[in-house]
Image (cartoon, rainbow, N blue to C red; front, side, top):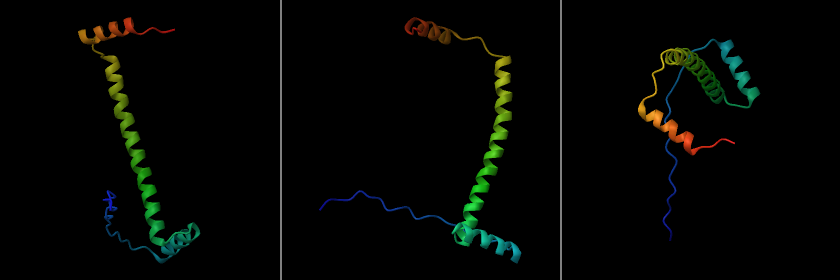
Length: 100
């Protein structure tokens, strides 16, 4: 009999999230879930996850763009002169690589 190396799927970690909402909002969410063919819980989780990912992405891109732009501009305006190793590497590259 062969030994199996299959791993059992890891037990999913879950946490409870509760929210009290007005009846009309719950009914609206329930209708949307039904139209999507999802349970209320699955619809809420999918919608929250999609929206949360979008918000995080928008904030990360905006913050990184501003920070990276400033760093790039600073590096371009005050670029250090190439050191000896970089100069040698560039010369070596020019000798060994030909462009046709």
